[in-house]
Length: 440
Ligand code: UGA
Image 1 (cartoon, rainbow, N blue to C red):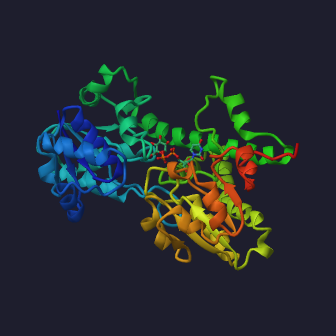
Image 2: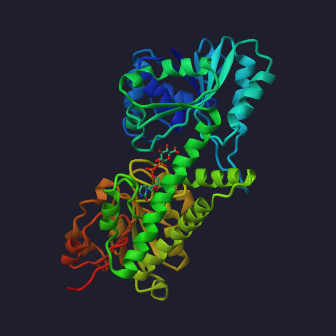
Image 3: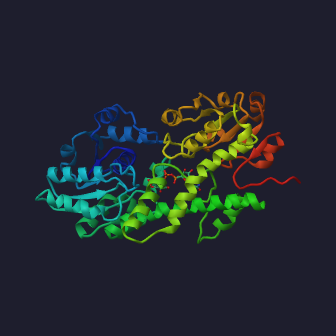
C-alpha cells in the first residue's frame, strides 16, 4: 500500500514511521521546509522514545520519505491521512479546523488517482462531512471516500500504543473506505488487534468520549485523594480497591497534580463546545474541566503550606523537580508545573527547576524560574523540594546528599513516588497526594 501522511508533527510522524515499519510505502508531508530538512538529516522535531531509530531504519529501507510538496507526496497514494494540528481556537475553546480544511482543499485540487482520505487529527463531529464537501467542491474526477480514524497514542509510549493498540476505530460510510482501511491495518489484524468499524460521526465522537472519560477518571480519583487527606484514608489503596473491580479497571486512577498535555485539556473543552452547539450539555465534563483547572494552583498552595504558609514563604527557595506534563516527553502544554511555579513566584518564592527534557520548552512559560542542569543544583539551598513530574531520575534521589544541600528536609511529592514511612524515617517532612500521616 502507498500511504501519504499530511502533517509531520507528533501524530503524523509516529503513525507514518509505524506504517512504514509494517511494510507500507509512506511519504510524510509537511509545509515546514526546515522540519523536512531536519528529518532528512535524521533530526526529530519532537522527543519520543524510539522514534529516531524507527524513522532511521525505515528511511534506510526505502519505505519512508519526506517532502514539502503535497501534490508530489499524495501521487499514487491509496490512503491519504490528514494529521495536522487542531489547536483550541483562541477565545472560545472550539477546535480550530482551518488547517484540516486547507489540507482537504489542497488534496482535492491535487488528487491524481482514486484514494481514501482519512482524518487522523482529532476533529469534532461533522468534520468528515465538511471534508467530503470540500473534496466534492474541488471538482476532482477521481473516486474518493472520507474516513475517520482517530489516534489513541500516549506521548512517551506512542510507538508501543500504535503497534499494539487496545483497538482501532474506523468510521467509514462506504465499502471503498472500509476496504482500503482494512488493507492499511492488515498487519495489525494479523496481531489480532480488535478493529471497530462504525459510522464516521460515531468514530469522531469516540475519540472525544475516550479522552473525556479518562480525564474524568483522573479527576475523580484526584477529588477522592483530597477527601482521603481529610478523613485519614490512603488514596493509593482506594485506587487499588476500586480498580480491582473489572467494571472500573485499575488504569488512570493515579492521583496527582491534575492532568495536562496537548490532548485532555483541549479535547475536553472542544467536547463541551460541541455539546453546547447541539444543545446537549455534558455537565460531568464541565465539572471535570473546572476541578482540574483549579487543582493546578491548589498544588502550588500545597507547596506553600510545606513552607509554613504563604505568609512565611517570601524570600524562601523551592526546588521543582520535573516540569513536563508527564515523563518521557518534552511537552509543556498545560503542564501543572506552570501553575505551581506561578503560585510560588506570586508569593515571592525563589524557584529553581530541573527537568530532563522540558527545560527549553519551559523557559518562556516561566520566566521567573531559574533552570539548572541537575536535580541537586536545584535542591542546593532550597527550603522545600517539590516533585511535579515522575521522571525515573527522581525515583531514587540521594536523601543524604539532599540533607546536606537543602536548607530544610522538606519534600512535597505530587506524584506519590515515595513511601511516606521511608522518607519520614530519614528525617524528612514529607507530604504527598491523598496519603495522610498519622503519628503511631
Ligand atoms: C492522551 C490519551 O491517553 C491517549 O490515549 C490519546 O491518544 C492522547 O491523549 C491524544 O488524544 O492524543 P497523553 O496526553 O499523551 O495521551 O497522556 P496521558 O498518559 O494520557 O496523560 C495525560 C495526563 O493525565 C498527564 O498529565 C498525566 O500525568 C495525567 N494522569 C494520567 C494522571 O494524573 N493520572 C493517571 O492515572 C493517568
